[in-house]
Length: 351
Image 1 (tube, one colour):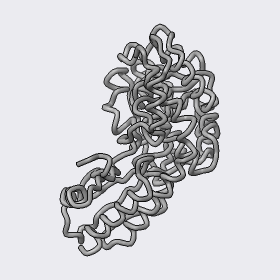
Image 2 (cartoon, one colour; image 1 turned 120 degrees about the vertical axis):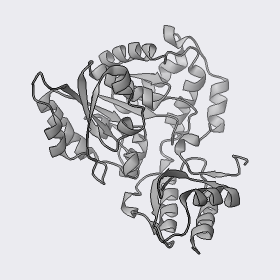
Image 3 (cartoon, one colour; image 1 turned 180 degrees about the horizontal axis):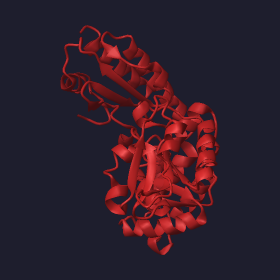
Image 4 (cartoon, rainbow, N blue to C red; image 1 turned 90 degrees about the vertical axis):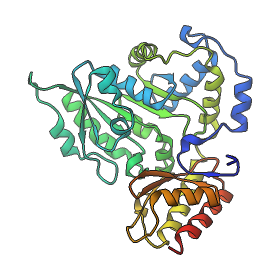
C-alpha cells in the first residue's frame, strides 16, 4: 500500500514531517546537545518553556521518557504516584516508573469525562505510616486518550492543585495532546499548566514533528531531569536536526488542530448513523474517536480492519475485542475524510 494514498487513522503518531519541517531540518544549525552546544535545541526549549509558562524545558525523545523522568524527579524509591486507571502512564508505558524507579503506582478510576474523582484522590493519599509507601505526586492527563480524547477544563486542575497543596504533593500533567485540549476549549495551555509542577507535551502527534517531546518545569526540576535523561540513554548529540521540526510544530501547527477536531466529528457522526455501531458522541471533543461493534454485526473485528484496508485503503486502530479507535491529524485531509466515510458506509452500511 502506498502510504500517500492510504487513509491512516490508527494514530496521530503516524504523521510524517511537513515540507516546512523538512526544509528546517535540512538547514538546522546544530551542535552537541549533551555538551549544551546545540543552538536549535536551546531555542526549542526556550519556546516550549514560554508556551507552558514554566521556567525551563528539556527536549526528550518521547512522551513516555518525559513522563518517566517526571516520576523519577518527583519521587524516590519506594514512593507512590496517584494516577488514573485509564491513563497512558499506567497502561501504555511498560510500567517504567515501577520497573526503573521502584515507584509504586496507585490507580484510581477515571470517570467518563477523563477526570479522577477528587474524593478518590483524597482517599488514595497515604497517611504517615511506616507500613505504607509515601504519596509524592498526582499524575493527570489532558486530553484523556482512553476516555475518548476528552478535554478536561482548567477548573478541575485548580481543584487538584488545591488538594495537592494541602498534602504537600507534586502534580505532573501528561499533556501529550495538551494543545488539542487547549484548542477544543479555546484557551492557552497555561490555563492548565499554571496548576501543575511539571508538564510533558508531544511534538510528534498532532503537531506533526517526526520525533520528540518537551518536559517543562522549574529550573531546578529541569536540572534533575537532564541528569535522568542521560541515565536513561536519552542524551542525544546533533539533535538540532529534529528539534528544528519541533520549532515549526510550535510556530505553525497548533491553531490548525481545530481542523482535525472537525474531521473527527464528521467521522463520528457518520459512524453513529450506521447499524450496529456503538459510539458516544459526547466524548468526541478533539481528534480521537472510539467506537464499538455490537454483537449483532456479523463481522469479526479483524475482518472489519482487513476489509477497510484491502478494499478501501483505510487503516484504523483495533484496540480490544470489538472496540476501535480513529485519530485524525494533519495528513487526514477533507478528501481523505470523505474516502473514509465512503469506506465505512460500504462495509458497515449493509451488514
